[in-house]
Length: 207
Image (tube, rainbow, N blue to C red; front, side):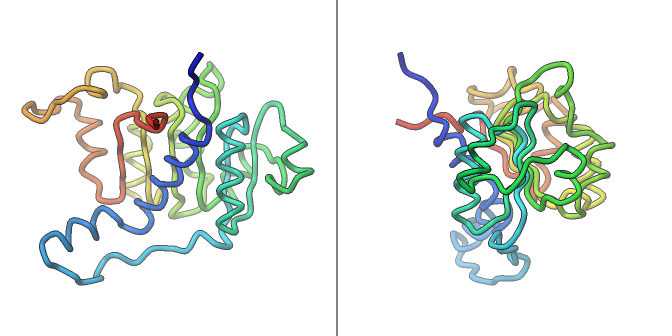
């Protein structure tokens, strides 16, 4: 029977990262208005940076391979490390969450949602991260405490966020709400940040 493509979700995670980091949406909107200024569009090269992949199953492993192609150092964190990924050079090494938070410039979430991983991204974990860290979530919305992510964005501890999932997405995602007011204050706040890229749970959505 049909199944999600791990590569599809991994590619979307990288697309969110690139769109956020390189201000793609902002630049696109500008040139549509004949504004070709580069002010405020400076990004960071991913080459030479460190990616922290939380959960290295099929999707996480696919993203590890993509990150390697970008010339990144790849740290994995998983309850069941896949040493074959280390042996083949896809993951440089496995580390615990704290070491991953401390060293990664780019963190992508692909962990299973359970009692331990629920809201694993919160005030405490964000405080352990590099200032300006990029957080990507194409996994489960409830891996992130959205209110704490907002605080991290406000203090600039989190530099960018790319979200394909949201913990209270059910009333909105997959629906056309263009003629309605968003009454979820947390979702509305996330959408107000120019350094947050959000899509409507479409990472799997390929032919």
